[in-house]
Length: 588
Image (cartoon, rainbow, N blue to C red; front, side, top):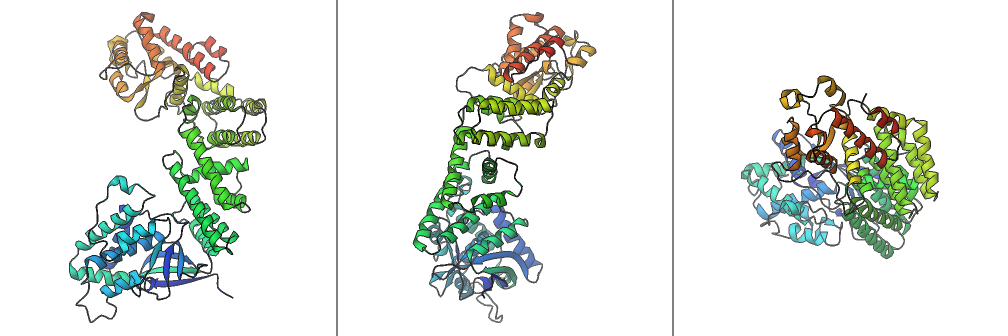
């Protein structure tokens, strides 16, 4: 009976010198991605080991799988980045140092130009490493690296080109340039000794598996132990394994389906390239959508269970469609409700609810979004945690998939708000005298800001350093005589309350800072930037000032008015009765 796998300890020389072994990077693997950091780390690690005369330095593992075709090549399931990088190093040596170790005739293990060429090609005919990660990757690798003399002259690479993950040719060139510089920094003797060390004393573990399915399972087990691979990588390898099992008896059909699978996968990666989510996060959202319940196992385990009886090509097509919908409805939307939801800390949950509604073409999606925003903001302001809103979120996902009426979903939210006394907690927190350090205050002001703007095409306001929380009555008011009408008692009540907070751009906030009220209004109106603040929540204060309201002062009367203004806007945007807070008229 054939063994499922066989681990072998091999030197670099043995790894690339075996007369029976040729390697290929199959379609389901990621393209070559190493840039300066990873290439230089590999060089530094090996060179440090050489300088310190470390015996048998361990470079890592390589997992391979037998191929069903008769090409003679075996698939590299794990370790492709290292193998490709080493091959580029060999080709740089071949093209630029033909006289490597030419005079070292006494050492039977000396690595000369013939040994290097043998590591690149078997019998000077078959290249030992081929890349099938995309249709043009092997031809690019051949022209740029593998052909004789290809690395003698290398065109420089820009930073923009290096960021292009779908065109590894730039990374091939970049790695070759790095190795040329590293090797050129050594004298002839040191260079020869280093190459001898690399080939003879650097070791790897090569794990040869009897078939690709087992290799992928082994790959997943090893990577569950902490090797740097994402859940998306594991799902991809699992689906490719399913594809291979399903069509293993029809090689031509399998080849076509694999090509379609890889094309859809690459398209999905392109869609998500400029997204706020990575692929694994997208898959988490898709998992929540499919399950409509709290997962019991890891992401990869849950999705493998969900996908095991599905057509892998249909699965990846559905994932691609899900990614496209997310890109359209969440990333590139002009919805003010979606914009305000983006500030919510529990992003995976509101996004999954929203995506479920879009995917299922839910009839009441607009009303759902308003209810969703209301529930999440109230829960956030009340101080609720993820664990306290999670099950409600899954209940809503299930209700949407079951096509329940919007009133049914409203009841889910209302029951949770009532059960956890969320409205009571919200009001307690809103009337606090110390609001300015709450994580929700800036998003809440932006939520009101969106509602104050007209219905022309809005833009998303990022919460960055450039958007500052402005204390209208400044924290250091006592340093200015112009604030003399403010007593410590008044400041103690109002200084950090919702009534004394607004939004400014970073530059205007620095200008306004701890200034007198008149100076602040000049900054709001113009300032060094010669433009009025764009925030309606702040323009309201400026409008009152220009109209001479409150005698152009920011006193307690003005603060009480601002309190009413804030509470009225709050109750309007989140549909909550705040008559008690308006009647109270001040923080406590």
